[in-house]
Length: 124
Image (cartoon, rainbow, N blue to C red):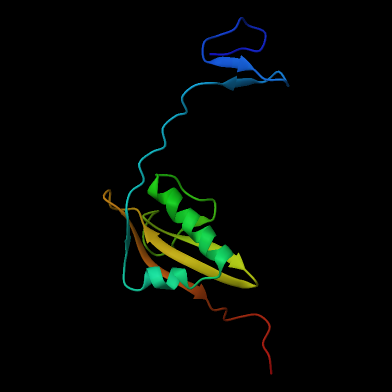
């Protein structure tokens, strides 16, 4: 372990600003689970605009390594946090990717779609 005013410790050094910095091997990244695409979910996700696709894709990557995106929330009506959705807002539209982590073997992407608003500004 490194301390700022301590004697030099193996694997650590003090940077120019005086903060400790670990020098050595980085902790290993967890092995991501494979993604299984159900139905047309992959082509639907690929049809999203770039920023929405990247945001949903990053949320799915975080699910693969065992964490949860801040943009992901449990889908209501499915009893618990086993089915989640990543929500991305882009250009006044909402895009969603629904996936499940209930199975240990893979992350299953169930559906990807653009949310159609039933309320809001209507044009005449």
